Image: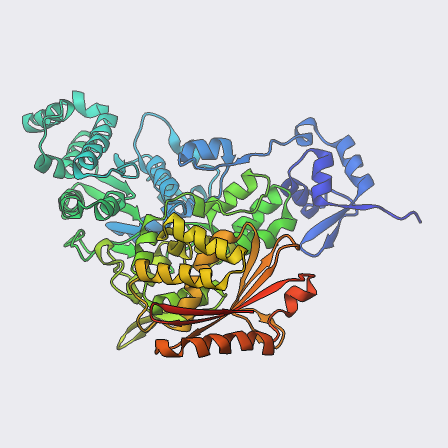
Length: 616
């Protein structure tokens, strides 16, 4: 009996010029004789592959592999030209729930814009038969009840994603242009016989930019009424990134102006509007305490903690596994999980869709795609108001630990930095943290345990949350600190740190050792091109505070141990104690084992804004 040579589904797909997903399907259907199960995959006799190719029909020999859409938020374009993860059952659930107004709060780039465009294409009444974009999707299999609602409504679709300006005047102009463009998209209104003279005058003055700010606040209400008159049916209203101009107002100093306008604009279209069929909005935060949604017929706010709709934003485990199979990259599942998994919406495990799509698009290069798409301005604002308690928690996160905090899901922009609960609630809502388990309701409030989701977010914490310290340094201080470390000059290092603490930081009184530990991590973060920076790991007979292991073995390694005390008079003794601990606990063991011959040891003691360093 001749030994058979078995090959993987990926190898077979390459030979057969098919997708791996198609080859797996052939195995499942028994069309590849002799194929055997090997865990979650298949092994196929090589001769079977060539036999099948000789017998296959021409159209089966080739299959176009669809690219992974990156940054395309047009539903029609994606389903026609790219690999599409089917989220159309969101339509079914919205129809079944009959919610008048719903707000989805999710992190940026988790599919909110594409989802709203999908709703627009499904519900909007047009001259084109748009059902073709849904007939092979999950929603169509749900039956006639849902099919009858396809293409049955006039739709108002607005996005404020580009309303990002530094002053209210420019932002208001951008908002006006967005509103005017949506009116112009409904060109049937400009020749309609259904409108009265006042409505026609409103349209005319909008075209010539003669409407005042108060009149623009009624634009959503007026447009929905006009569309109902023209089409004899109620209107679907979709608003994407409603909170972008609000965030800009907070960051740039025109918050009161923008919140006043948006409150009147949205309540006009979504509160007691007889022309409204239903409304859906997306954003990062709910802005409820400003009464933006005051009296809005009890709108539903669906957040990352809610079970309902949890699988419609981001990719589920099965969806990512299917993508890996389709692209013949099943062996990359573990890497995908390590970098981009870890989010938890309700009880559903979720992957970051932006990063997963970029990963496949870029030939499976694992790197931080999502965290490089924003300037993280709010993160920097949070870091500017950091306290020792917050620093301790951030340090715990960086070391892979979890911590418990109170939760405030009504976070609003002006109060993001008010306290620990608001800061970490914002980081959770915005996608920078994940819940370890369900929130616990008590008489004292809501509590939840949090941790970092994945490797990509950990990288962001290194570059943003720890590096906020370096951002406050002037060039001379930073250069002096790095030069002192390179020259092994303990006195110069002490002077640089002391100068930094005196001039830049205001929260050292009562700071803990963990806080100083986090500060030092931030200060040395810029040296990562020359050193492997490691914190709080086991070596020798204990856990060191901080080591800098050189990437070039001819350079010296660095070991630091920290102490924090109340009385500056005790600094010299505490610094000596820290230095002795390095020797007694043999914290230099790992670097010695790696062949680092020269190792510099620093005992560092802190008291308020004072520091003492003793070097060996």
